Image (tube, rainbow, N blue to C red; front, side, top):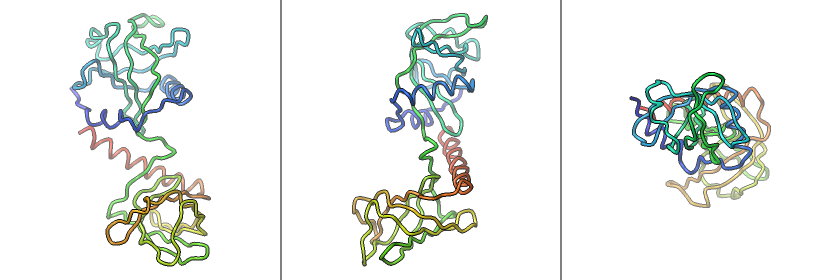
Length: 247
């Protein structure tokens, strides 16, 4: 038996809920199209009972059709009304909660009809997938401002759309949310980069120890090549988090 309680708890956190119908539909359709392997937990949350894949959506009955579970013996647990938890274990974990409606034969093979969920969960979306930088990956960032002195700080985490960083609070002219920066400069994977950025948020004016403050930056003109590099870096970090959570 595989115990993935830590991973499941992290995935099915309230912050990872997607309730918008288009987002739910998009995820379910992608799982059906990919026939992606999904872990299945029946009733109790202390044992992974099997795995399956989604075969089709049945809009008329507001349901999904999933393959019979493997190993075959665990299908005896699938009674109508039984609660199910399904999730993927790829680089961007996704999952949902549902109930069994019936067992049936689908295209001559054993299958299970389940209730179509109204809420799905996704651990991290690609749009905000971030990698936290540790001491060995320390990255210095220079902020060049319009009408104020340049600032130097340290990147805390980075994603394809921007970064969070920590700086010494400036004394000449305070930063403000929405401020457009002339340029930020940093080295990523041993290559220098310069691009425009915008201050998205400040840490509520709260000063950290040593007169430091955190802020979020949004990249304004990031190239597709740099975006791909950051995305791959963030995905590798995410996989490491998955491995640690499932141990």
